[in-house]
Image (cartoon, rainbow, N blue to C red; front, side, top):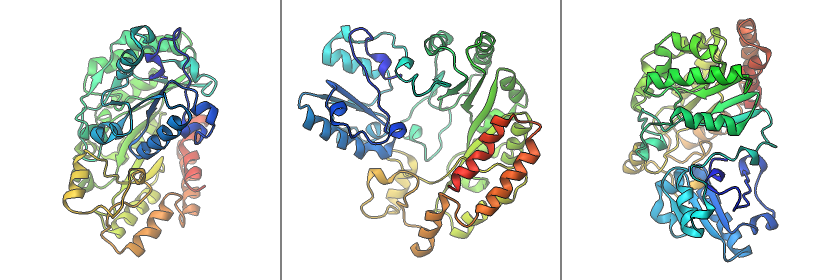
Amino acid sequence: AMLAGGFSPTACDVRIYSEHHSGPLQDPARLGWPDLLVLTGLTSSFDRMRHLTAYARTLNPRVIVAAGGPPIRALPRYARRFFDYVCEGDVEQIRDVVRDAWGAGYTADPGVPRYDLISQHYRFLGYLESSRHCNFRCQFCSLTGENARYRKYDLETLRRQFQALGKKKYLLFIDNNFYGNDRRFFLDRLELLKEFREQGFFQAWSALVTDDFFLDETNLARVKESGCYSLFSGVESFDPDVLRGYHKTQNTIVPQVESIRKCLEAGIVFHYGIMFDPARRPLENLRRELEFILDTPGLPLPSFFTLSIPLPGTPYFQECVSERRLLPRVKMRDLDGFTLVSHPRDPMERVVPFVRDLETLRGYRARVIRKAVQLIRAYHRRLTPFQLWLAVGNAFLLCA
């Protein structure tokens, strides 16, 4: 919707397709329709972008292809071999592409997200963005590799997004770090959220925050008052040494388990991810952390488990290259967090079954169910039925 907002709504017919939501784009009529094909995605989607470009050019030799996102910013020179426009900037660069390809009359300036193009798929959920990038520099993060600096929008931009979005039941901020490093801006957004909530624009909202958010214990009460029902934070590991090794020192200031419990006790669901690195850590160390998560009372299961990903351009990628950790013939599409791409410390025949079973927690399912029941008992007076479903439903999805 944000990319579509760069096109003039009167001069351009714009259609949106998400393979993540709707599956592979296999309709020749739809793929051969556009005069300008705009592609974006995560690093692992680079090969798929090339596939779609080849298919589109076969169906329409005159099609113009523009590509952006993390894989393009990581490999801009290589990307120029395949795409007409290589967008190394942020989403607003699409206006420059349209202006260069067709003229200024086909752009929308300033662009407002085209929420109307996705409303049929997201009737109850709306997406907003109030800031971009992050003020921390974790070793494995693509934002670190891109040297992207934290940037905030003015409140009027956020107001325009609200008005374009219309009324939704739930809002999800897609900010890389909603908390940021500007206290005044954080508080001003909470006041704006309260204002729009009182006007009936939404019931509840969710966002991603970094762990320093929990340093100020008043923050939980403030976001709760403005309608926050869940927060996501990148825990990555409960081992302080692992966190320091990734330069994620902000997660070592406040005890993470304590922060999670306080969040849940405040009536806010806590979501997080765990990252395992068999190239850096012995297998038994990884198993102990998994046992810690399952055995710690009041601690919800993570939303996902992922392997560490050596994203091109990041310090972690450079480390893997210099130490010759990468396995032979690794492709961009293998950088998905589920595929083993680095030489592990332990024998491959022991690590592969662990990685294979991790995605669904095979062998731990009975304990997962018990943990979900314990979580419901612990927080059923603090969380609404919908929040409880969010907190424990993921446990069953992990085991599906």
